[in-house]
Image (tube, rainbow, N blue to C red):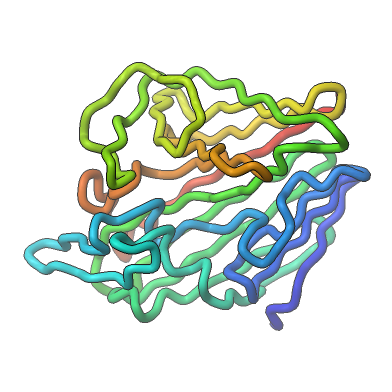
Length: 262
């Protein structure tokens, strides 16, 4: 199938999926409200096969040091799949399945599959990473850019993490955990019971971002948008908390965004 943009609808909800532009969700409209910041770099892109920054772009696989391109010097950031073209495997009125073949500069062959499923009051994104041959460490997650302002109302964030990863001057976790601190944030938080973050645009819309995963990065230092990023491990996690993908055991995670009008 082609990799042209896909539009899914359910009730007043509409989702646009852009396989050719990194497999991202390029729009999420509830009635007249566009929830995601528009533009080719924004929307909501998949972070895979790693999330956030890798220190100096290097990670250790057994005794082998792997070097990724420094696309956010001095680090590598957000994986490779957001820069590639995905392919459409299957589409219905309210669900799309898209795939991405892991290739250079990622050194291990494999496939990423993302399922986008829409209902009238929720969007569920499910992603899996499969290894074709050799096992490899990986992470996956999502990086949505939610519009800070909807129809004149600025967003409020509400969440209760168990801890905050202390952030060093290089923007990477130091390995220490602290009590959650006030924003603004470009920080990773731990939520052992699962990610549960509420975004509220007063008198407009309430949106809950949920995932069974326990890691979430919140980035709200930009004037136009706030990011709430569920992921399977912390930044630099290929080094500090690797999850091994084997031919028999893929890595899979999902996030559900549910909303209601206010």
